[in-house]
Amino acid sequence: MLSKDSKIYVAGHRGLVGSAIWNNLKQRGYDNLIGRTHAELDLTDQLAVRRFFDEEHPDAVVLAAAFVGGIMANSLYRADFIMQNMLMQCNVIGEAYAHGVKRLLFLGSTCIYPKNAPQPMKEDVLLTSPLEYTNEEYAIAKIAGLKMCESYNLQYGTNYIAVMPTNLYGPNDNFHLENSHVMPAMMRKIYLAKLIHDENWEAIRVDMNKRPVESVTGTSPLEYTNEEYAIAKIAGLKMCESYNLQYGTNYIAVMPTNLYGPNDNFHLENSHVMPAMMRKIYLAKLIHDENWEAIRVDMNKRPVESVTGANSNEEILQVLAKYGISNNKVVLWGTGKPLREFLWSEDMADASVHVLLNVNFSDVIGIEKYSSVFYGTKADGAVDRNNSEGRGGAIPSLGEIRNCHINVGTGKELTIRELSQLVVKAVGFEGVVEFDASKPDGTPRKLIDVSKLHSLGWTHKVEIEEGVRRLFEWYQDSLS
Ligand code: NDP
Image (cartoon, rainbow, N blue to C red; front, top):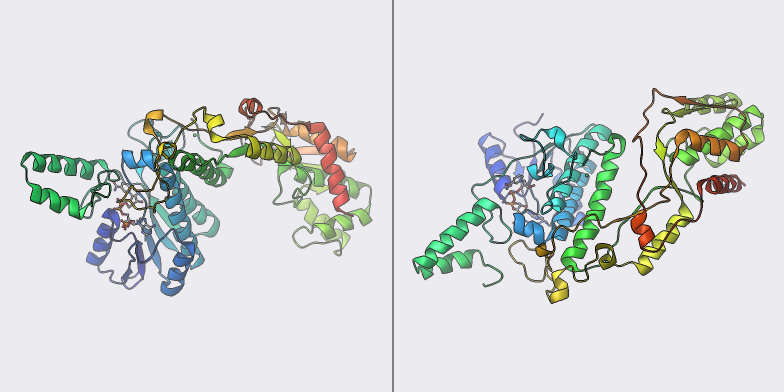
C-alpha cells in the first residue's frame, strides 16, 4: 500500500479530473505529489517520458492526462483521438512498469461500452457489440488502455487499476466550443448568447480573450486468449482509417488470416499451430525411427528449453514429452474440431504488394473526397485542443465510415484435425495423433470473407495441401 510520503505522479494534474485527484490526495495528507504541465512534459514523447521516470522514480501513477472532447471534436479529429491517447497510454504505462511502479490508476470512460448496450451497463458488456460511431477512436484507445492495465497485472503481477467514470464536470473544466464536453460547451454557449443579447461586449471580449474560438484571437466479444493482441491491432487499423478521414492520407490496413511459409517459427512453445504441429509430428517420427542423428540436428538448430542435440537421449525425450511428443505419438491441444483458414506467406506478400501498389482508400470506401483536406483545409498544424487551425478534419455529413480494412485469406477452412492429417501425410508419419480436450480450443471458427479483396483484384494461389508440402520441404532444408 502507499504511505503518506509515497511519491505519486498525477499525469494531467491541471485537467478537470487530474486537478481534483491532486487536491483530494493533498487533503488526505499525501504531500509528495509530482505533476508536469503539458508544456513541461509532452506525454506523447516517449523519450521525454522515459527521462521523467528516470529522474523522478514515482511509487505510484495516476494517468488522468488524455486527449478528450465532446461529440464534435470526436467526429472531426478522429486521428488525434486515437493516436494521442494511444501514445500517452503506451508511454506512461510502459515507462511506469519499466521503472518498477506497482500501483497505477488509469482513467477510462463509459464510452467504451457498446452503443446499444443494455442499461444499466455492466462491466461485462464491454466488446459485445459495436461502439457508438462518433467516439469510436477514443473508445478504442481507452479499451486498449484498460486492457494494458489488465494484462500487465496478469503477466507481471502489477496492480494497475482502470476506472470508467461517467460524464464529469467541475472546476478546471474545458470550455472550448469545439473540443469540450456537453455540459461546459452548453453552459458557455448559453452564457455567450445572453451576453450578445445584453450587448455586453466587454464581457464577451473577456470571455473570448480567455478562450479564443478558431483563432479569433466488435457484435460479440473477442476471443479471450488473444484479446490484448486483438485490441492493439484494432487500434492500429482504426489509426489508419481515422488518419485518412482527418488528414486525407491513404493508409490501408490488411487483415491476414493464419499465415505459414518459409522462415516460419518452429519453436515448440511460441509458434503457431501449423509449424508447431509439423515439428511435433516430425520429431515423433524420428524418435520411432531411432534416428538420433536427425533428432540432434533438429535440437541443435532449435533448442527446446535449453536442451540441445548435445544433451543425453533421456534429457531430450523428457523435454519433448512435455510438449506431447513421444515414440510415434503426438498429443495436440484441444478437441481438433476448431475450424481454421491458412494462407501461404508468399501469397500474403503478393496480396500486400498488390494493395500497396493498386488500392486507394477511396476505392475501399467508394468516396473520392473523404476528408476536409480535399476541399482546401490545411493539415500542417500542431495538435492543440484549443486551436483547430491546420488539423484537417473528417466530414461528419458523409455518415459512418468504418470497417475500411481488407481481409486477406483464401476464404476456405479446415478443422485442426484435418490439418493434422495433411501434416501427417507430408511428414510420412505412421503413428497416432491424439487430441487433449482438457486444453483450450480457442475460437471455434475463424473464416474470413475475402470478397472485398477479390473485388480489388487479388485471389490466393497456393492451396493448403500444396502449402503444407512446401512448408515441410522448407523445414527440412532449414536443418541443413
Ligand atoms: P482534461 O482535458 O480536463 O485534462 C486532461 C489533461 O491532460 C489536461 O491537463 C491536458 O493538458 C493534459 N494533456 C493532454 N494531452 C497531453 C499531452 N500530450 N502531454 C501532457 N499532458 C497532456 O480532461 P479530463 O480531466 O476531463 O479527463 C481526464 C481523464 O478522465 C481522461 O482519461 C478522460 O477520459 C477521463 N474521463 C473524463 C470524463 C469527463 O467527463 N471529463 C468522463 C470519463 C472519463 P492541456 O490541456 O495542456 O493539453
